[in-house]
Length: 116
Image (cartoon, rainbow, N blue to C red; front, side):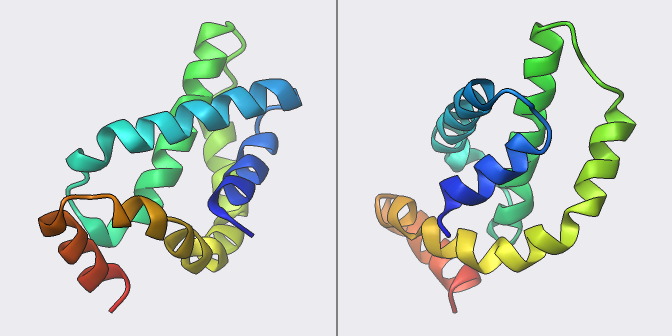
């Protein structure tokens, strides 16, 4: 299972409309790409990605005036922690392509911390 599959499953559990879920997924990937340089702790890349996804879902509900309580989202996240933890290695493998395109100094740090 690749990163897109893992994230779309995560998003669909929180957004009923499949087309909206696909749009959110694209926004998540765009935010990952645009903000990778701002990642402070490469060891927490998995949590960082899911935080981006969670915030993008919250933005979707805010924009559509259908924001569920954040505690509801937090409960859903807690229920899915085991899935997310198991998926961590798969996500890391999927990010390899993105990492390969980073400047060498960033790539080395990520590879040494995540894949060593």
